[in-house]
Length: 447
Image (cartoon, rainbow, N blue to C red; front, side, top):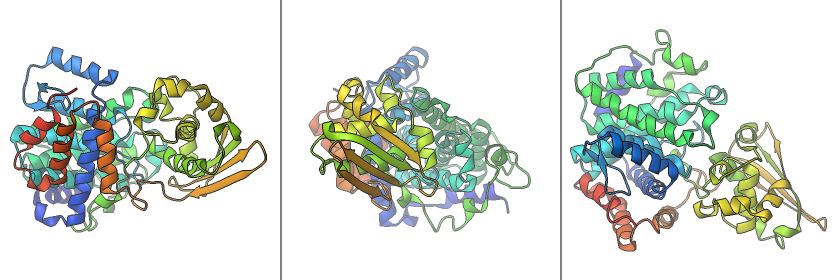
């Protein structure tokens, strides 16, 4: 079996009519979440650096940078929007394969979709196939490669972006095949940069590279080498010693993984969410943070490894610190984006609580679990255990909750009337006649 060929045919053969209503709703949730986290990051220093670079070096006007009245090339639009979507680290995720599917995928299909002026149904279909390719590859790679230090979002995201862009550009199976090979040739990204400006760069570069792979394939660049073959390909084995190619094609086109997305109610690393949920669940049971003597948290070993740091200098680092994130949640009662500021990170009441938090690894726990105990100074103890954090597929955020999150994020960046029109457009994405119209709303009169 030529696995790359079969996966390419899945991309070309899948149509909007193959998607059931719950899958279409899942795509709408992803787009709603995406526009909120992306446009809300428009004034971040990382976004401003990329915007300045593009304005200085690129005079093309093929696609738009969201939240700005600015156009650039399709590739640079995918790059900048991909970076912006991951700056806040508040975007959706797939906890099993440890990737953020939308941040590389949606910028690529929006850039190509705006240039080609496709319909909402085409955007939905492109997202569905791109998501499926990236997540299936994640399952095929297993767990160990991530634990060795690879960043799943850029590695898997290049393939998702390539698949989604290929669908928008109406590539044939041979061209999609080439786009996958080109994505493999560019795949990379490490976890060393978590908590720095480098993490969103990984996402933006993946989006850019996936789109570039599809565009180059459209121009006649051709490579026919089955990169997903266990026997013949170096590519998967460079990343994973436990590569299982059957996950790429098993029931492909019949079973979709779109309903497995986790959406974030808290603006911190997903591995911290179970602990934050537990702290918030106990917050109303204690008289106040000042009465806390000690907080014990048990989590999966990987969660401690990635987020156990206590030394943070800025809000970005705080999002990857379980002690600081949980302290913010306990002190302020929320851990949404506005609570990750320099003032909260430096707040003595937050740092005092963080110093009283002890985190222990528990090898029997999954990454969705956390056990929290709060010991008060008077000797009282309050305990809880989280098995699935809020926003996970097993404990999902409602559509209304995601709309509220998007409204909250866009407030201050758009006029209220524009926010309402944007959300209404995305809630009825299948009825959209022109991607250009959607982009126009996203870039209209930024505050």
